[in-house]
Amino acid sequence: MKYAELPEFQAWPLEKKVGRAVEWIGKGFEVSRHRQAIAFSGGKDSTVLADLILRFFPDERPLCIFGNTGVEYPESLRFAREFGRSRFGDRFVEARPAKLERDGLKYKAQRETLLWLESEGRLSEVLKDDGKLKSTETLEDAATPDMWADFRARNLVWRKGTTMNYWWCVDQYGFPILGKSACKLDAHRINIDCFLKYSASVSEKPELLEYYDLLRQVKISQHCCKLLKKEPSEREQAAHDVDVVFKGLMAAESRSRMTSYCTRGELFQGRHRDHLPKTDPFWHCNPLGIWTDDDIWEYIHRFNVPYSSLYERTWTDRAGNVKKVKRNGCFGCATGIAFADNQMAVLRQIEPRIWGRLMRGGMAEQLQALRIARANGQLSIMDLYDAQSLIDIRPCVFDSVDDLILTDRVPLEYDAEDETGG
View: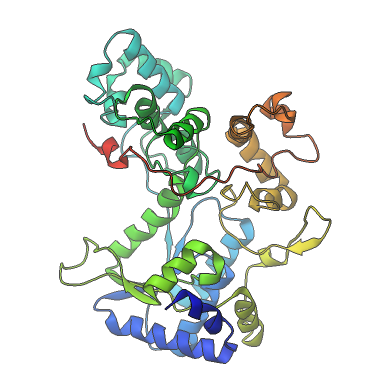
């Protein structure tokens, strides 16, 4: 579909959009040679998608895969389970993050090990010729038994069998602050540290030097989305021989989703999955591509579709207007922090205890470091107090971090695949 055509399709009445969605859902079932699944979040969009499939394709038997990230709003988690189990029965699958297969060091212990190797003149044992870390495991294996015992005594070890949850992810990679433009390097933080400090391949390009300087000061990453959502869902898809996944994505949600829809359409082949024969493609179906939020709510009310009570909770924006929550999402996500009335600002009002745990668990320090790093020498309240003291100041300085939107055009010279070597 051409970009210029999208507004025309989005202006269609609901009946016509339902007809188009049903048509593409049918095509999704037609191309399937194995099994189909609905990517279910417990949010309104995927709930409408599930209802469409159940309503118009009662003889089909798709799975309903709910990605339980561990950072779901209580209302979303409760609704997802109730809806999924009541509507899909034993076809409701709850995807969860994987567990550690070996003991691993927390980031602080990894840093101490790296500095010890540096002081001993033994960095060549863990670094490649170009200064990049061979692998996180290589570094951890270089720590002596006495060091491991000390790390265990100081609670600096992630034990085998520990779920790789949100807190493991932010320790090993960083907090999900700002968008993909600021979190391009998808590697363990200790790997990025080595790259920035020791690698000979770091360029002299001004835009890259500025970007790398930010990374030296702030520990941020979007790896949690991959770890908590994408990978668990794909494991369940592989376990159940899925070759078509239905998603409730809409072009109206973001620029990236609009681009994806306009270039790929409602049904397209994704990368091949190893659990399928080489001749069988894996398909993505986005039948709600031309829908908007208004369409979703019209459908919900017209067909009396249940939805999460999270959408009935209210909060107050900067202008004093009372609004309802629009999206469920992961409550630990701060990717929109550079914008007013972002998800963290909403979380502070509707779930202050959860917000407080996130801030006191390290997010406040990273937000403070981010604002200071981008302050261009201008003093602010961030420079006068430590991060923990700032948490209780009102109006809240962590509700947004303005003027921190980074360009997507920054080229990178670090290959995330490097960390798998060694």
